[in-house]
Image (cartoon, rainbow, N blue to C red; front, top):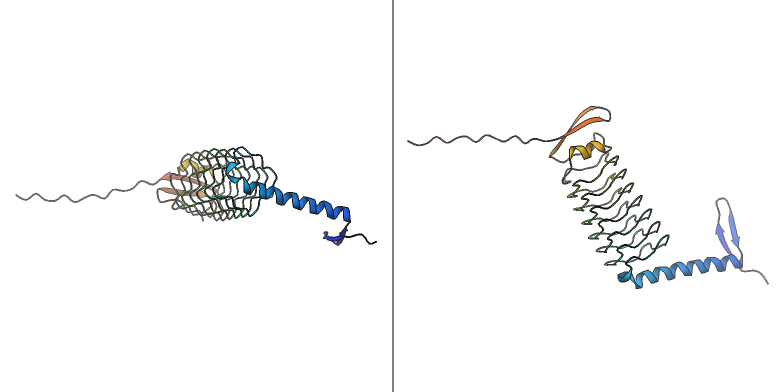
Length: 236
């Protein structure tokens, strides 16, 4: 009797799976689906849960309680985490590309080396969070709170940063080349000078840059000139 098989594509030629290998593939697929369903069914009870190295892509986890959970190295691309409780959650190395996190609450969380490219991060509270080496390419951070956040070597290429609060955030080596910061809030000259930028970077109106050479610049607060009011002559 012929052995059942399934074709698996290799780099240069197709490889046939044996019946035993096929059963193992099916077992792993069923396990992955069961893990996804379990997370969905318990999304309001995931406080402190260990969810590392899981494929949770595309799940609807809106309003989930994942405070202090560990999701490091998990796949959460295109996942809906809007309005989720992500206090002190660990996302180290996770993929959240094109995920929806608008209105999520994530202070003191770990977002080290996380892929947030194309993500909806409007109104997210990232205060005091660690986002070193995070990839924000093409992400929308409208009115996000990055107060006291650690953003060392993070990438903001083409990110939308209107209304973002950068108060006391650490921007050391952050990539701001070509970035529009015209509507960003609470940026200081020291923060900008510690980051990577180029002549295409647009600073907010309260800061001005003086380019001295390639990669050499100084940033200062812009001093507003007060217009003198004309004194009205007293009528005798």
